[in-house]
Length: 341
Ligand SMILES: Nc1ncnc2c1ncn2[C@@H]1O[C@H](COP(=O)(O)OP(=O)(O)OP(=O)(O)O)[C@@H](O)[C@H]1O
Image (cartoon, rainbow, N blue to C red; front, top):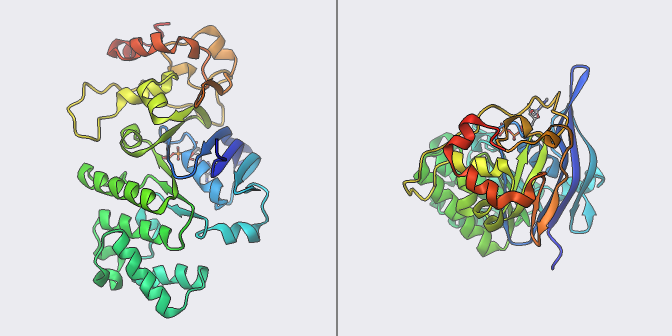
């Protein structure tokens, strides 16, 4: 197997809060193979954005990477000197933040902003930068005449395309897109995702797509990394994780979202309860308080993330019974009463 573009091992990121600490990412491990789209999925607050930001090392002032490795092209991004890390940003790893408005400055035209990256970061001359701006707009399907427009003159979907063009400016190997389609209606969501897929294939890049919506993952991703309360609970190919999920949380997420293809799917079943407060996480499996299949061990012993097939890892004490649990998980009653064992 060829070496993955990015290999994250036992990553830990904490926030200092008052006199305490929140371990927002508590030992995350996953790979991003070359030329693949990896969906980082989980409910709000489970640590997805923290992982995504840690990868670029642009983290909040009260945050710190406290352990682990992030191997990228033979270098560990956790320990890379800041100067070298800075040289990697935009050129090798580009980040599209949660709202396109966050990556675009409202007071400058989009051409000005593209130029900032192309000329200041990429060292392009004026004429080459202009040509690249036009090329980038063509790539994301926007008329080049609109380069002189301001961000507010674009619709939400178009703004997202501009943000993607900005990320692609210097031909990065990895694009990290944080909730790229969340605020958009389903039709525009599909258009943006289709385009992201086309660009990924045409340019041969890898993409980490951060989303709370498992139907977005099912629509576009090759691989899935499911996070819950700061931990990776399941990862593997899209087929392995979403068609035959082995962690009860993934099974629950699958029941909770409509199908992005527009097919009339069955009744949506939410997972009762909420993720734990990460300042005081439960001692055993963090999903135990919400899991319909919880056993006594689950409440006291943390299950490790273990390979259950060639390309499929799960952190669940009951992973060996996944097929039977999947059948039960498909029934609504399972999620209403909880604890069906
Ligand atoms: N600057 C911060 N200071 C303290 N705690 C933070 C900070 N940023 C995030 N957190 C906490 O870290 C945990 C993980 O947050 P994170 O934003 O990474 O999750 P997420 O899965 O991306 O959720 P969302 O989709 O809502 O952004 C949460 O408990 C959150 O409250």
